[in-house]
Figure (spheres, helix red, strand yellow):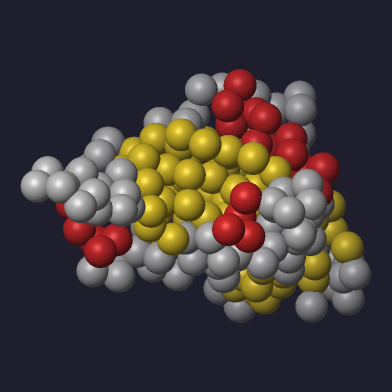
Length: 191
C-alpha cells in the first residue's frame, strides 16, 4: 500500500493548516477532552470554561485514506508538525474553524498551543493523554452554543486539521502514479 509523507512546501503560499475542524471521528484517532471549571462551594457557581483540549497532529502516525478505489496511508514528520503549527499562527488562522470539514463556524478559537517535548512530564499527561514527542496539542475556546451542546451530547469528539500539503511518496508498490495524480488525490481527501 502507498505511504505518503505530507510536507510543508514553504514556497507555496497556500501550504499549511487553514482551519481546525471539530469532528465525530478524528483521523488521528485521538479524542479531545472538554475542560470545565470546578464548582465553587458558594451560592454563586462559576460558568463553564468551554475549552476543548486535544491533539491536532501526531507525528509519524500513519493515517489510512481511501480515494475511490485507491487505498493509502499519509503521515506527518515531527518537523512538518512543527512547521505546520508555526505557519498556522503566522497566518493568523487561530479563529478559523469548521464543523465536520463542511461548514465554517464562528465562536471557536485556538487559545493554547504547544508541542509535546517530554512524553513523561508534559501538560497533556495531566489530562490523561499518552502521546509521542512532537505532537501538536491545542486548546480551543468554544463560544458557539450549538457546538458546545454537540460536545456535551458526544456528537463531536476530536480535532481534524484542514490544509494544503505537498507530498513525498514512500514505500510504494505502485510507481506508475504521476505526481499530479497523487496531488489530486490529496486535494480530494483534504476537502
